[in-house]
Length: 246
Ligand code: ADP
Ligand code: MG
Image 1 (cartoon, rainbow, N blue to C red):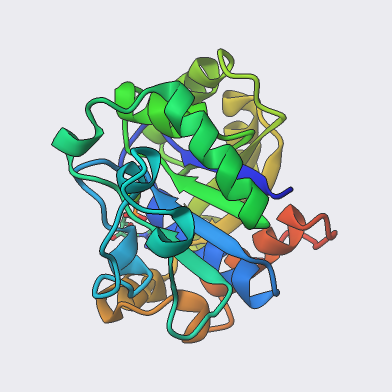
Image 2: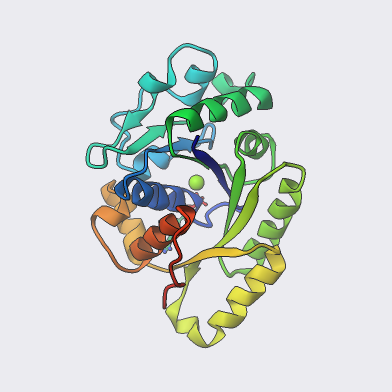
């Protein structure tokens, strides 16, 4: 039985999709069958970030409604055979999906995959609740901005309604030039969100570059954010990896 994670933030643009793509690709490269699920209904872009937009035909609503099996709908990455993607439906096709449907779908996915990582939409509305409904663990991605931290805090509060087995924090876009303030801001992030830290990801222009080239970052780079994603993937596998030096 695999493990499922919802990756959420409250605020948009904190780096959730980049994180799901980066850590998903790293888990796959470590040899784990990994399914990334885009739950950003109507605004999906995980397929682009993973460089799989030309492969996607079916979405998770097709699986939930029985139009297609999970085996057929989940497409695998051309260069990472353990990495699979299931994209999000358009809003009109998702309107009737209930939380129980999502729960059953994610449970079925964890019988076939070691990891199922769900990319939640921004906000705490129905799309977020659907994305969170099936997952047994949560990862909150925040930057060190106070507005992002406050949203992370709200997301944590919202998630307390869900029986999650664990909740962790990722601090993204950590800047070297703020080094002196770094420990302060990371400590503040942990305190504000009230969650244990599972990793920090540095500000790294290669994240956007990889997205523009439609290639998973870890396939073009091994340092910076790529290294951070790999370290976090290792931690999700239960390995002890020291926090990276920024
Ligand atoms: P979300 O899914 O939370 O809306 P994205 O993953 O789409 O966020 O990221 C938003 C923007 O921030 C994108 O342009 C992405 O390339 C950029 N970004 C994300 N993480 C980093 C990082 N560690 N360093 C630099 N840019 C980043
Ligand atoms: Mg996103």
